Every structure is written in structure tokens, then in C-alpha cells.
Image 1 (cartoon, rainbow, N blue to C red):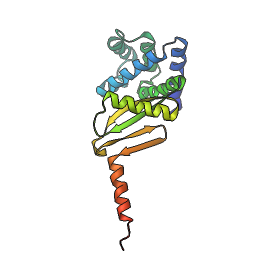
Image 2 (cartoon, one colour):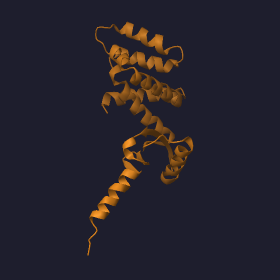
Image 3 (cartoon, helix red, strand yellow):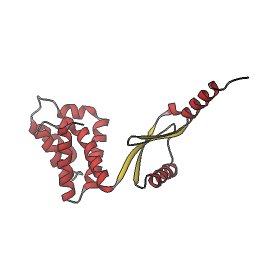
Length: 180
């Protein structure tokens, strides 16, 4: 993560904390980033050097102003003014980390071969919340190559309970068996 992105994320964090809208701003920017990921050409347009900054700002206002809080729109305007809109994803990642740290939340990813039901996700969240003695928020990613089971990444730690790993371990054990 670049120092510049961290600086902007910290500025957004400080303002949102002061205004007591950390969660709302986090949700806003996660929606904005998701929208941009679905329509990557939008970010391409916002980074075009040929397009005037005022035109870029009008574009943002027309898309986000109606249902997006002013603090989020204003921050996007600053990024346009400072030619830093291309760092938006990086800034949002750093901002989310700061917000999670503020609320004592560990965010992780659970990889599963099939979609998890709400009950399964809640159970996994509960287990890891108890295990780590911290609030845990899990994002689900579907990965059919796992065959079954799940793998959870929380920070630098990986908890692997996949059938793929179990089969690999079984194969390794069978290869180590000596026949007499």
C-alpha cells in the first residue's frame, strides 16, 4: 500500500470519526468500489487526462450525489482535484482496515466450494469470534477447486479444512506407508 493512499485514507478516517459516521462512510465506499469493479470503464473515464476536472466532478455529482452522503462525494471531489482518483481502491482498503481496527473487528475471507447458507456463515463467524476473542467479519468467496469444506484467511493465518487438503494429506500418508 502506498504512503499516499494511506495518507488519504487517514484523512477520510479522521473526518468520518469526527462526524461519527465511520460505518456509513465505509459502507458508501464499499458500494462505490463495487460499482466501479462492475463498470471498470467508469474509473478509466475519471482518469482520462483529456477530460477536464470539472467535467469529472460533474460526472461524480450526477452519479453519486442523490443517495450518497456529502462526506463521500466531497472526498471523491478531492481525489479528482488532486489527481488521485486512481488510488481509490487502495485508499478504501486502508480506510476499511482503520475502521475495523477502531471497532475491534478482524476481517477475513472464507473460501468454499459451494455457497454457504446464512446459518453456516454465522456458525463460522461465531467459531472464529470465540477462537480469536475478537469480532470477526467473514467475506465469502466461492472456489469450486476446493471440492468441499472451507478455508478461512484471517490476517496472516490460514485455517484450512478443505477436502482438497485432506485428500493431499491422505495421499502423502499413503506414500509414506512401508509395506512389509
